[in-house]
Length: 192
Image (cartoon, rainbow, N blue to C red; front, side):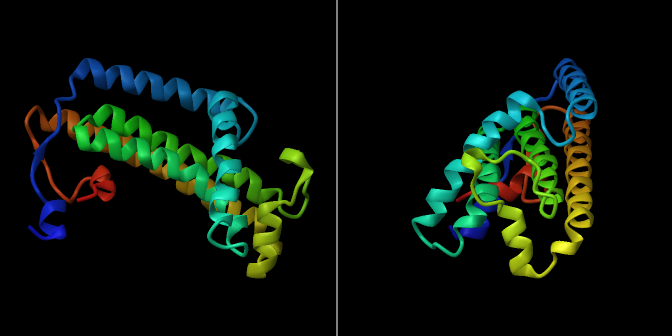
């Protein structure tokens, strides 16, 4: 069987009951409230963990390329949620997969916060090191647009969260036993 055929292989999602959907929606509403009422772009527990993944990403990418090491932090923040998403997708756990996607898209708020600080450089850095996005935006010759780029990244995070919630609505309304194919949100992470 070819890789593409295995990607499109029909499998079953476990049912999303209305109770699970309501619990997810209530948790998401609470999470959004925390995001909106807290420090912009920083959810204490979640972004504390994301910081660890960020810092781990630098030396990992640095093993392969010193020039790309600066991108490793941001990549590290996104790799771990993707691993979680893939694991839940392979098990057909739609609600858990949706939680992984929320984590993935929440990272955009934190990254946007860091991007918006590229010129001001007032955020405290771990070990007082190099400001990733200042250096990246200088490389890309877009430093003067740091806040505009950050606003677009933040917006993308909100849109992603909305799409995830909409996808879970669809999964809930689709009922039990509905086959998943290459057209759903989580199918993007399916590996052969």
